[in-house]
Image (cartoon, rainbow over all chains, first blue to last red; front, side):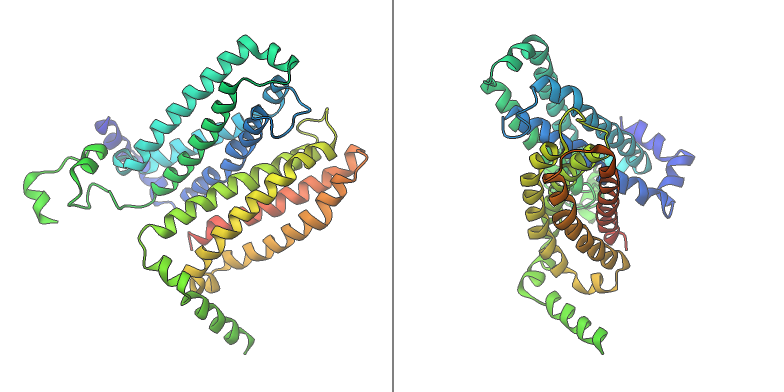
Amino acid sequence: MLEIAIWLSETKWSIALLESLYLYPWIESTHVLSICFFVGILIFVDLRLMGTAFNQLSISEMNARVLPWSIFGFGLMIITGLLLFYAIPVRTYHSIFFRFKLILIFLAGVNAFLFHRQMRLNGKAWDKSKDIPRSVHLQAIFSLLLWAVVIISGRMIAYNWFDCDKQPQPEWVNWAAGCVIEISQAGDF
Amino acid sequence: MEADQLFYFFDQLEQSFIGESIRNSVWMFPVIEAFHLIGLAILGGSILLGDLRLMGLILTSRSIRYVVGQTTLVIKVGLLLLVTTGIPLFLSEAIKCYYSRAFWIKMTALMLGLIFLFLIRNPICLSSEDKNTKFKILGIVSISIWAVVAGSGRWIGFS
């Protein structure tokens, strides 16, 4: 993986993107503002699952009409996020916040997958009765919490507190970041 | 003269206890900033949902009054979080903000946005009888103003 990151960092467009005066900040801003589409709209889907907003709409209607806008936002996040990674591949690869964020996104993805599988099976029954299963309620809360922490850890990627070139670091930090520390180097910092 | 007084005022704010504490801390600014972003998600999403409805792009099967009505509480929660995190962020770098064009654009747009939201958009939407087309402009104006607020807000960090 590190080899790929290093290779990416040496490509022409990666360097151009990193050194660009306006393109990088614009991509970065688009990444940040897409939160409104993605998480902002998802909040209402989750609130619906918790029975606290849009109760006039059935859960399947909410998923059919509102969720696509959130997915559109997610697409924007992915595209701009990949570009941001492409501009700074090696440092980002080693960032413990980035790694933590990826794990959380994976967990949120599993959570969403499980929810949608359940909805395919039971969605019609949910629409008919007023009661939403407790597990769905919890999945909605879990979704909101996970995405909130994704936002927090994403913001932290900007800070270099735990970067590999800032030594000494606690052992677990270097382990989590996958830093390659040469023994002679470790003492020099 | 007036500019001097304003600068003096901002200088005082920067030297306030909260401003000092945040500046002297490694992690406080980033953490408050992160919660500011969560506020952005909450406010941005709830305004966006209403504006998309006004523009006829989402939930057209439901009335404008209903859709916007469902967002008003979340709008207030988002604003509360944004203001309570935004003020300490500002206090920690008031002088930088004083010299930042993006900051002044954001504050101007924010005032416009709040006035438009609470005095024009929401009152019209919440009392509407739903003749779709004339509301399109409301959604476009609203989303434009708030895009400037959020975009210039992000730009404070670049300057």
